[in-house]
Image (tube, rainbow, N blue to C red; front, side, top):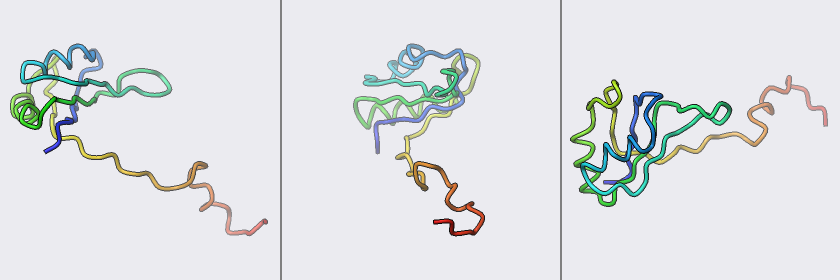
Length: 103
């Protein structure tokens, strides 16, 4: 098992300290991050918590998945690796060039 956990359905009022405190009751938290929107800086309603061991991560998932925090029932599970996004740095505009080769 991985010791990095995904935490979803967070209230927009939840802080990283709130997240840290909730998970610290189940082991040592090495990192707690909220994901924010790049444009607005507002929280996006999910984050990640890294526990120090796999055993602590398992205990935290069992205890906190479905638990209430800031009026919301949390979704807690093992974080999956981020999937690579396809395409080039200009997006997918190459595919929509109108079918004409203007080189």
